[in-house]
Length: 479
Image (cartoon, rainbow, N blue to C red; front, side):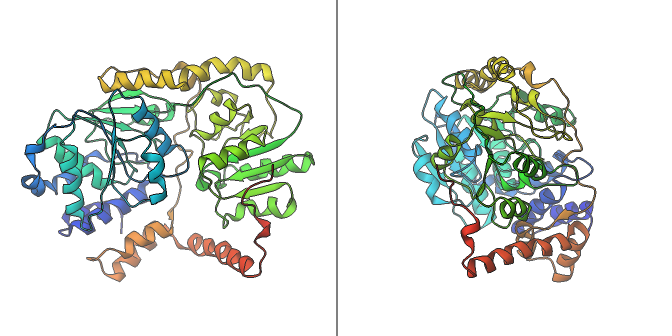
C-alpha cells in the first residue's frame, strides 16, 4: 500500500475512528521520508472538511466568553523541555492561563501543572467525534489559543479548524516543538512560533502556508555567568532515547567510548535511556564502574545528577532541546558535534566536525558566547517576543543562530520506516481493513527485521533481571 493509496483510503473512509488512525499512520510513515515531507496542507484541509458535519453541534452561544488564553497540549510529561516550555509561556501572560489536555497522560504530571494553570481540563471521551466536539466547544470560549500538540495530533487540528469556522476571529499560535518532523496543524494557525533556525529553513520549503512566522526561542533561567572547572572529567549526556541512537552517519557512543578509554579518570552519566538501548551496552560492560545508565528522571533528580558533572555532551545524531544549553548555564563545559542540525542555541557555533574526537573548548571561547546565549534564551527576552506575538508583532530570529545552514537530508531515510510498537498498535486498531491489507501496509512501508531484532535486547534485559543482574544499570550515580 503506497502513501498515495493510504491518503486516498483516509479521505474515502466512512468510519471516523479509522480515518483518524489512517491519518496518524500517514504522519508516522512520512516522518523522515526521503522526499522530505514536512507538511501536507492539501490533505490536511480535505481531512478537516470531512468533519464539517459536526458544525451544527458546536455550541455557538459560548463564543469568546473567556479573556484568558487557552494552552492545548497533547500529552504533558514530568520530564524533558516540551512541557516546561508550555508552563513557562503561561507564566509570561498577564492573565491566568488555562490548559486543555487532548490525549492520555500520566496523572503524576498534574501537581506540577496545577502550579502554572488556573484550570486544567482533560479530554476523556471514547469516540473520535465526541473528542473533537468537546475540544471545539472549549476552544470557542477563548480569543487566543496556543498549541503545543504532537505532530500527529490531527484530532486537535480538526477541532481548531471547526472552531475557526464558527469563530473566524480566533487567534491560533503554534509552538513548533518538533520542528524537525512532519506535523499537522499548518492549515489552522495564524502564527508559527519557531524555536530554531532549522524550523525557519523547513518553513521556507512550504509554499502554500498562510500563517506568519515569529521567533520565540527556548526560555531558560539565567542567573549568573557560568564558571567552569577543568580539574575533573565527569561527563553527562541527557535527552530522549531516540536522539542518541546511532545511525550510519554518526555514533556518539564511539566518541564517548574512545574518550573513556583515553581518560581513565573520566566518568559518564547517560540520562534518558531505555534499558533495551543496546548501543550503550558496550561502554557499560567495558567501564562498569564509570558509566551510569539512567532512565528518565523527574527534573529535580536529574538536576542533582548534573551537579556531579563538569562536562555536558549534546545528544547526537539528533540534537536540539533545552538540556544541553541548560547544563552549560550550570557551569558544565559544552561539547557538541555537527550532524546536520543547527540553530537551536548560540552554543551550536561550538560544534565540532563529525569526524573529530571529543575535545574541550577554552574558557575564553565559552565566555565570549555567553552574551548571545543570554540574548536568545533569557526569560525576559523570550517573554518580550512571546507577548509581542500574542499581539501579532513578529520577531526576527537572532543572527547568532543563522551562521551555518542545516542539512535538509540529515534525518531523512533511504528505505522504509522502522516498525515500532506504536505504529503496529495503530495498524491493528483499524476496524475497516482486513488483516491481509494490514499485513500489506506493514510490509510495504516498514522494516520488519529491525523490529524483530529490537526484541532481542528487550528479552535479554528481562533475562538479566530474572538472573538478578540488574546491578549493571544505575538508578542514579552516587555523588
